[in-house]
Amino acid sequence: MDIISRFLGNISLWELMVLAAIIYVVTQPELRKRITKLKFGQFELELQALKEDLEKGKERIVELESEMENDRRQFDDILQRFDPNAPVGQLAHARQAIKAEARNLSETDTLADYLSLKSSAEELYVAAVSIREKRPVALLPELIRFLDELASNKELGGFRLNTIWTLTSGLHRTLIACIRDGVTPMPDQQTLAYAQQVLLKLNNHSKVQADRPDAPLKGIQGPIKHAQTWLDKAIAADDNNDG
Image (tube, rainbow, N blue to C red; front, side, top):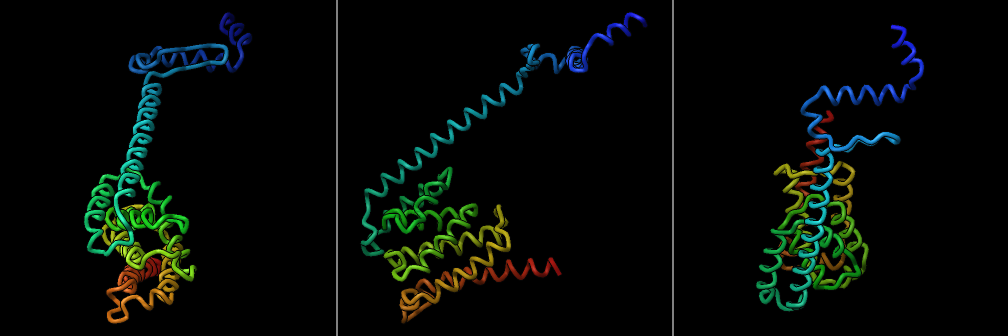
């Protein structure tokens, strides 16, 4: 006991903790197999499992970067091959190419970048068709913000009405994805309320009011109305849950 007392009296708490860790590792066969290095001084424990996880994480990051770069190349190629101001019927081939690419899209950063008043007509058309096809719920905040910018612009950014219709229809379909189909992340109530305000402002825009005066619901006002219906359902359901 005297030996133990003297030993304990000459060892620091830090050293005791290291010793306890070593004893624990030595008595755990499975854990011992996974440890590749024990270094004292700054006390470095390198676990094989941790090392493997880090390597897998690095590999996945490289894969994602490669996928993103490939997505951008594919879209860049499409952008060079169509005229966004051509008659709608002549855009069918371009739409199919964009939809095919959107279905395989691994990220939405490119689409988010295209949601800008500074974008070209081609870029925004690609974004609109892709969003309508992909229904990327995670992109809803950016999409709503951009529709607000369009609604605040006297000329709707100078973009073609068919492109605005496609973009608004994309919002409608994406709302269905999260509200009806349960695709996550579900936007919060603040985002839903903001979307209502944006759609009301867009609906009252003079150019939107003038779109298809013979049949307004076949113009931009159509997807606005459908989107508002789903927003009303989501907000009402949340109010009922609170009640």
